[in-house]
Structure formats: C-alpha cells, structure tokens
Image 1 (cartoon, rainbow, N blue to C red):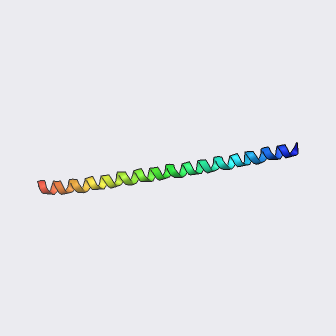
Image 2: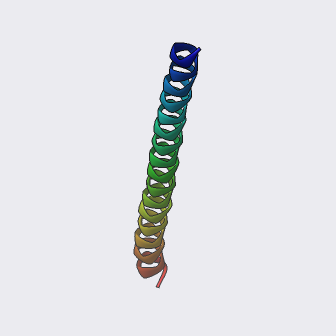
Image 3: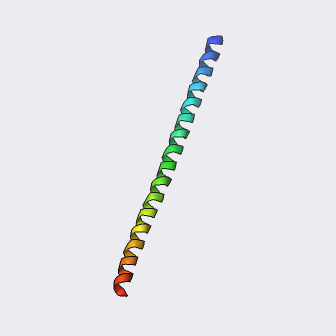
Length: 60
C-alpha cells in the first residue's frame, strides 16, 4: 500500500506543478495583452492628436 500512496502523492505534486505553470502562463499572456492594448491606445491617440494639430494650423 505504501507504493500506492507514494504514487498518489507524486501524481498530486505533478498536477500542482502543471496548475502553477498554467496559471503563470495565463498571467503572462494577460499582462502582455494589457501592455499591447495600452501601446495601441497611446499610438492611435498620439497619431490623432498630431493630425488634429496639423489640420488646426491649416484652418487658421
């Protein structure tokens, strides 16, 4: 029976390790998506502001 209990403990340890890996990977990609979205918003916002300033100067 001790071998059976040892196998169960090893399997649970392996499952915990895989769970931690999945959680860390998902956190990494979620943070990466937040950074990508922020860069996109800042890039589009700055492009719109630059274009708005150029058209405002032409109108004046």
